[in-house]
Image (cartoon, rainbow, N blue to C red; front, side, top):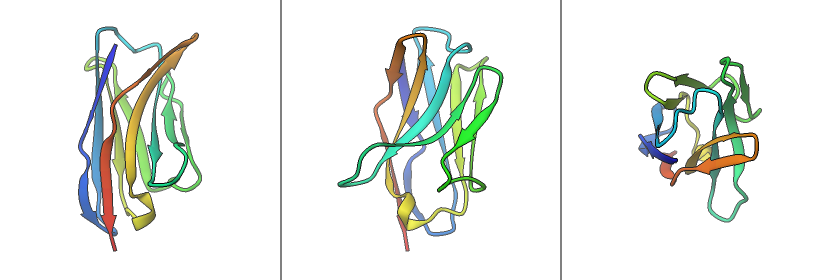
Length: 114
């Protein structure tokens, strides 16, 4: 399984970005899919998760600003990020997991300028 994240970039505070993560090699419709991020000098942290039945969970720091969604027909998960803050600057990673199987994509850089 390969996960390819895209959509990162440089944006001003208050702006928006939409990340995409396309999976190949296996249908992931029955997997949890999520986004994590790692800022310089910090541990990787959970951002958002979506189940196969579209139940979503968010970190408190992004709740109300970020929206995770998935398109099983395209084997893709999205992260819509609105009202971005400088503290959202990080490398964002997508992940797919279930039943002991765990796949990570390479990250995409998100930089929010103040």
